[in-house]
Amino acid sequence: QTLPSPLRLRQGLRAHAAAPLSSQDHPNDPAAAAVAGVRPKTTRTGTGRGSGAKGSREGRKFAVDAHLKGIAKYDEEHLHSARNLTGVQITFLGTSGGSPTLNRNVSSLALELTLHRSVNETWLFDCGEATQTRLMQSNLKVTNITKIFITHMHGDHIFGLPGVLCMLSNSRSKAIKENPGGVSNSWALEPLHIYGPPGIASYVTMSLGLSESSLSIPVVVHEFSDQPPSALMNGNANRSAGGSAVPYLATNRKLKNKVRVELVPACEKSLGIRNKIVQVVTTEPENAKKYSWRRNRQHGALDKWECMRWPLDLGGESKGAVEVVACPLKHRVDCWGYVVRELDQPGKMDPQRVKALGLPRGPILKTLKNGQPVQCPDTDRWIKPEEVLGPNLPGRKVVILGDTCDNRWIAQNARGADVVVHEATFTNDMRERALIAGHSTAGMAGNFAKYVDAGSLILTHFSARFEDTDSQWEELRRTNAKGKLKDLMQASRASEIGSINTLKKQAAAKFGKESVFAAEDLMVYCVEKKDPHNSQVPSHVFPRHLDSLL
Image (cartoon, rainbow, N blue to C red):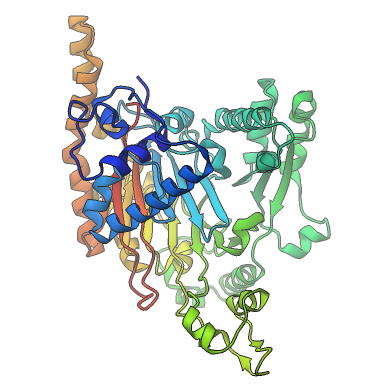
């Protein structure tokens, strides 16, 4: 049994949105058939370019109309659609910490960005084992994945990376073979970018090299460095990461010239702040306590990455639409969190005002849209952009944290986030154990979300102990019964519901808001666009549970 394609699903949703989703009542409805778990029978309703354009217009109108009816109706009618409803959408591919469970894979999530008609990309954050499987079970388009961000080098966050790289390479190679020499598949030749901590380049090249894996696409690995930009430009930086990767590349001819390693310099301003603190701590230890975060420190030395920031050069079409800053987190190993910020865009142009001012169509309007004044050719009057443009369209901010027991160094960049994705490995009564392990409790996650004034909080990275399946496994082995795995999964899921609800309540109590979610594998969260007339109000976040092969 397989799910119908997203196109067929959308066609069925447009035709039967108002009707109940029932395979018996609607045998030809793809959406109803998906609910029933059978492959639908579809017929062509039209051919040619005209019918497709008309269907596309109808689909957009339907989405807008449904949205105006309210989020609940909107979500219900698009339950089985793969459409990115709001332009910013988060799909969780793994929500367990340390090891997988029957219902949860280890850490990974996908951020879908469809912005300003020029950006249509999917970014992966962490890549635990079996992420390939979750990608196939999800409604994500694999060929849209252009960037992978790694938080740290623990196995439950990186063991799936080599397989995903081969999967992406094969999918792009297939697209090229289906349309050889076509202009439309030029995107398939673009490099895949990986951002992560020191050691990520060696891991990628070693795993691919020793397994004799081949790639059809170029891969650029960006490793974080403690050097300033000037040092990297002058070639004085220690390029141990790139050097250590060379032997593994040499053993695999298939990877020759396919993997390039680059070092990401730290922000000059953040390095200046760090050097100032180091000077005070070293020369004036009695004054070091004026830095509030150091009052409880037993020693005067700073952590390795403390205070640093890494603004990432994304390149491509996303460069003018999105900014990403990496910040260090406190964990047992070097760890980072990522702040993804959509840039504000010019407001909508008022056609009536343009006509009244006598402005002709063409490049002059594009110049105004870009925020630059223009001179009217008929009246020689200079016209400012605000005379014809509405209020700027405010961008959204998504904060994705790795494992951490201290996230103060990302707080400044995370302030005002629309949504924060934060780990909640432990309950509040296990705070001491959490600090020793370098993890957070649900209350710590809620405190951080409140401190940065976030709009919504999504908890993830739940401990596998919440899903106690030992007794169920013993019963399964004892009876040696077949067909019980599904029942076991349901039983283990029921056993964790109480613990997960406890985590949500503890986080909400500290956060002070009800917009707290406990992520599940293959759950999708949409981040609504902001109101341009009230940009200080955080975006509304709502979940969608898309059907999968599970």
